[in-house]
Amino acid sequence: MNETKRVLQRFDLPKIAFGAWLIAFAVVAIRVLVQGAEKHSVYPPYMLAAHRWLAGQDLYTPDNLKFRYSPLFAVGFTPFTYLSDRLGAILWRLINVGVFAIGLRWCSRTLLPRIGANAMSILFLIALPLVVPSLNNGQTNPLMTGLILCAFAALAHEMWTFSAALLVLAIFLKLYPLAAALLLVALYPKRLGWRFIALLLGGIALSFCLQSPPFVVRQFAGWFEYLRDDLRLDLPPDAAYRDLRLVLNVSGLHPDPLLYFVLQMASAAAIAIACVYAKRRGIARNDLLLITCSFASCWMLLLGPSTESCTYALAAAPIGWFFLQSSARPRFYRITLWSAAALLIVGFVGAWFPFVTHVHAIGEQPLAMLLVLGCAIYELRCALAAAENRTHLATDTAPAITSLP
Image 1 (spheres, rainbow, N blue to C red):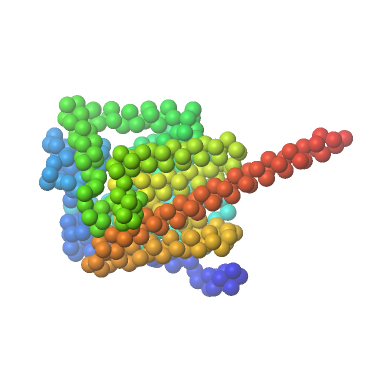
Image 2 (image 1 turned 135 degrees about the horizontal axis):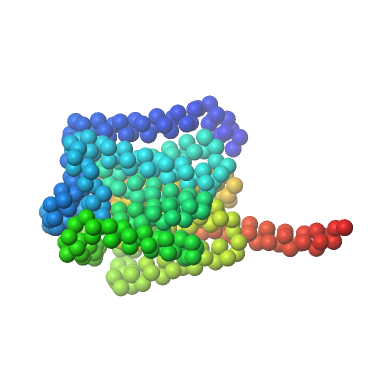
């Protein structure tokens, strides 16, 4: 370990991390300038949805199947209609990267207050390959992940309204951040619950002020219908979602849709119960939020409704956090974590080649998240043990303190 530290000290990791992210963004920006905003990009469906919102036309039609976001996402995207496609596509990616970087840094500084500059740089280097696919095609995953991370950091600072607003914004990008929001509401129902519900309803009400109410109702109905019909249950593994269902199908189990839904709800309930139990046992707030965020990321990727390869940007924070703490963990923990990283690297490198779909069909990404989930469970166990030790210490020392003259 000392040798590793000496090797790391020879490099300026902050500059390396910043340079790597700058190069990645520059390469993508140059590609957009040269090839246009339509090549390898989901930016055109976003623009089409924004134009249709302004024109009062239906958002969810067969000719725009790549738009699977809420009507409020189309509302938020309308300012880009005043920009050229190339400029708008680059600005959109810059917003995604910026919010993700702010979220990762703020949340990590808050939940791991002893993290130094080198450790933060390692965290960003770990996150880069998980974010690059979304950066390249313009998906919302970095923005959504950054909003969720900022929400956890804001909650740690007791910024309840700001945290609720960030969660609502993430949900209006994609529906499944609702899992993270409900976990936090379960932990802090009185302080966060009513704020979250009020802002969620307020955001929906705002959309009725921006277009005719019948049109807005039709768009929300179309969104939910689209999500309901977009489960990809009948597609082959190379075209299916990259979630636990894929692992089960590859293993020959092929769960019934109703049984799988029960598994989704039961696992969500189990995570919520575990987090609430941990809070009541008195684990430190930072540990509680870090573990809750990790559990939420694992659930959204393994059992969420629409996990794609780019969605694995959600895994960047928990994997990075676990790596930073792995030196104090047993050997099997480090092996588990490195195995998860290796599986994700296989998926990342596989995306460079035409046979990428065949690589993803083996389910290496959800397998990696199962391993990360195991690390999260171990972190919960360690946090509970630390809380119990603090309780015993306080109990043992209390008589001695009261007996002092």
